[in-house]
Image (cartoon, rainbow, N blue to C red; front, side):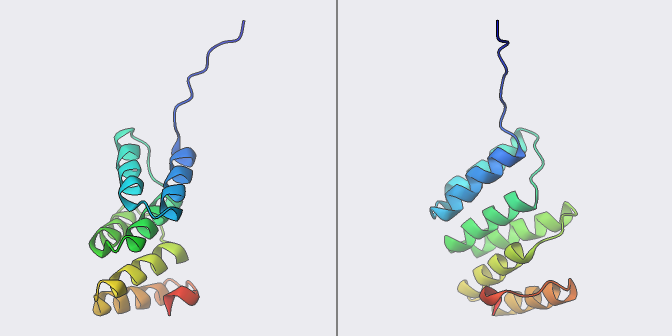
Length: 119
C-alpha cells in the first residue's frame, strides 16, 4: 500500500503563507507565522523576512519592521529592495525620518537600486 508521508511545513510554505497574510493586511498573523516558523527551528529566508517586514509596514508597525530588518542583518541575510523599501516606508509613516534616511543611504551603499516606493 501507499506509505503515509508526513508533510511538515517548510520555509517555502511558511513564506508563501506569510506573503498571503501580508497581501491581506494581516500583520499580526504574518508576525505570528514568522515566530512559529522559528519555533519549528526553520530558518527564515529573505522572502519570509521581507514579507513580514512588509506586513508590519502596512500595519503601521515601524518598530517591528525595523526590528525585523536588523534581525535579518544579524542573521547575515542580505536585505533585498523589498525589505529596504518596506522598512524605509514604515519608518517614514511612523515619522522616523532620520531612520528612513539612514536606511536609504545604507541601501545606496549596498548598490541596490531604490525602486519607486523608496522615494
